[in-house]
Length: 193
Image (cartoon, rainbow, N blue to C red; front, side):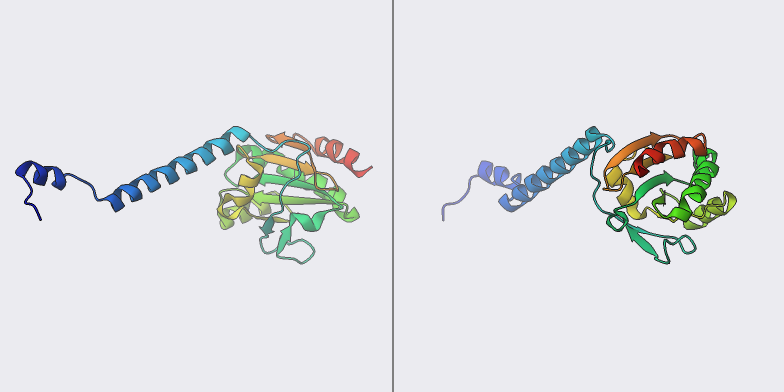
């Protein structure tokens, strides 16, 4: 084996091994893919009327179950009009609309053709329970664990409400709080015909 010159020894000491180069480039490409996916999701905006929403499973708070079930899947509600409301206990506009939502729920609940789902966003269960008790909420409510459901809807904040028809298609989006029970009824009534 030929002896290395001093210059070759210095040059070889500064080299990164081939396996490390491959590892670094692989990590860089993976990072770029993740950033690209995040940017794409941001550019998509929220879901739009006419979109069919993917199924999701909402674990419900104890005392806020639906027909005795501790969780509910969107697919199980086909044939009913579904109102999905994203809210949080720390959200002041959510406080404004809470009485309107409960009033509309009380109106539609006996018939069973409309289901309200409260999705508690980035919150704690104790704070959520205080909020629901304060405003007398009785419709099914649960936590958006890991923000999985809000990511499906690509929400921008709270409150946001999505109304789906009997076939599961999104028909209406409300960004911000409802101002009255009548406003909610006006959006749901055409979907029951």
